[in-house]
Length: 371
Image 1: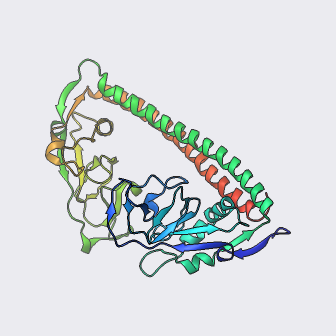
Image 2: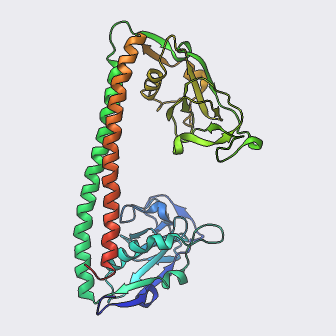
Image 3: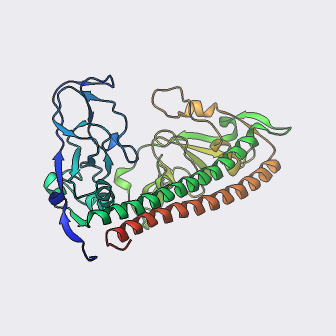
């Protein structure tokens, strides 16, 4: 450790106040009593959001400027209290003493978050007051703390701006593709006929139950048929079985949850509940053209309180279809544009990942006394 620095614990330099939920009456944001915060859901980027719940029976109170830590799943995220607030069991307030700069403490707790989050409670991830007090703290003279905070503030401001620009560019690349896709189907040429999805497909149906007694999480010689669900993660792959319900090239559309996630399926598979399958009539419509047509549809208004798609409504969805040779030309252009969009998105995502790594590196250096 750098000369003049010491290794201490949070409890040596801070007062740690474990939250306790009041048992009294709660109010909506009408200004009665004191703002009440329960956990991570109340957090903003660095400061807690405007309160939505108030209480007149306060228990544990955090002061303005205290650092609030989420102590129940997720464990470790920290934010500053911007007012005097009542805190529930999902939070702990950490109040630094005069010799510890609160921003220096904040950055160090941020740095410790991966270690804190790795702790497991009996039921779910949690950390208690004693464990927080025992957390290690690199302690430097106050002028040194203030100098490091100034460096980190400036660096993190620049990183935040760079991340915002990279994210904006990533979104712009996607928006450009989506705009072009919409124009294909709204500024269509002559000879495009209006059809229903049902008239363009050999089959449209929803998946069934997961075969629990014929299911494997990994592909094996016996269980080699993929099972797809309505999830977006891993392209919706749920597991593997030994019987395929769909054997022709088709597309799948998630009907609930990740609503409208669309994928092309070219190998035999088994769809499960809340996944809609469309098998195109290849005499009328190309598989890839059908895919782009569905991707371009608006699933925002389903007419139900729970966002979902239904097979009957889906069958009646309208689309305009040109000749097969024109479909082929359109698909080729859209494929090229999608490939370029994915390339750009990958570049910007790599930049975002690199910027996050830079933040970690700066924090590592800061609390090794190398800044």
